[in-house]
Length: 296
Image (tube, rainbow, N blue to C red; front, side):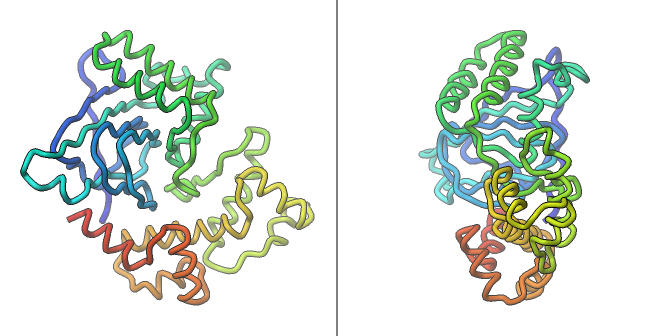
């Protein structure tokens, strides 16, 4: 189930895409693209697949999805009945990092927006007071001129970047080789060392003292530091990385579940099932079944 690469053509005289999409049901397949995507579900319900995570979506959901993160939205079964009683609609904006110029987001004034775009590599759900502000702006952009839309998009990015009302969907970047968790700039190098080590060794038992020693920290100091910057315990983070890897294998490879459990770093199948259900809400077999059904 390799995701499709979608190339999004720009309309004449625009630097980004704004689309208001109304249909019987969302029909875009499992796909990814090079652009950032700001998407608001206006009407309809269903199941969303973002990277290696699966969950329900509702009307009013708002997300910022970073480049190259595979995703698709599958409506509930009632939307596929040809009776015209249900409608699916969304508003989407697609833009590249250079849509305002190659180095625009390198400006000092854009520091928070630059961090927002970096954090979107984890796919971000937008909540709180800023959510309704953005929904109103997205609807209002429909009747705006191209220059006004440009100003509105920049305004939304700035407002979100200053709001602290986003929640990451993924526990690690979907492209594991460049993994780095959300952190302050001054700590990025240290966090990068930690996450890179985890990504290279998660398929075996990892002990806190291994990484603490690399950073010349005591076990206790390292544990406090890690919890402060990731909002997770070291053990929970490693387990989520392992489950994320297992989800990728369930989607992309025809391996049996016991082998996937072992390849993801779990010593026994019962422990794998326990953590998989705790994190995803379903068992591995059901995760694979839902994905294959949604793909059909």
